[in-house]
Amino acid sequence: MTIDWNHFTPWASLAGGLMIGLAAALFVLLSGRLLGISGILGGLLAPRAGDARWRLAFLAGLLVAPTVWALFAPPAVPRVHAGGAVLLVAGLLVGWGTRYGSGCTSGHGVCGLSRLSPRSLAATLAFMAAGFATVYVVRHLLA
Image 1 (cartoon, rainbow, N blue to C red):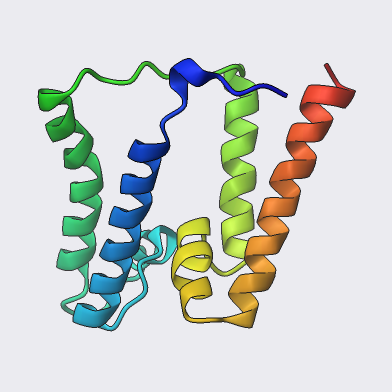
Image 2: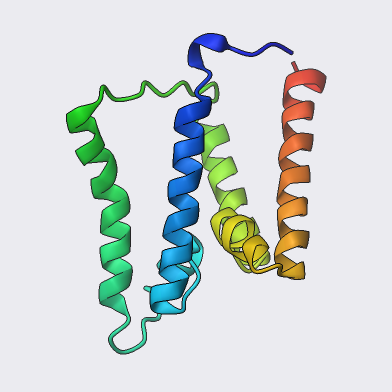
């Protein structure tokens, strides 16, 4: 295994991780809620009174932020090495896993682990192991 030094971005990755951690901490301190995308989006499917506005604002921020960033920096060129069918199946499996695991990677991996939740530790270990196994099978056994 080799590192692609031309696309290795430790400082940008560190800054992004710090911003996600800070956002999660501020969100729980200011609202008392966990910053999990699946929970925020899922709450829109059966909203409680007065609950939809902040959820819509959060999701709008997820869409607007990359647009604003593109005004100041060249957009990243995505490199996807899979066909549409594979991406569709992968998306459905992620959605199913999120529902089955009662949360997404951001909810369990960032917020749950920071709260020392045993359920989030189990979920994070499970999705990391599944990811490692998938990459191994696809790149080494099926290649």
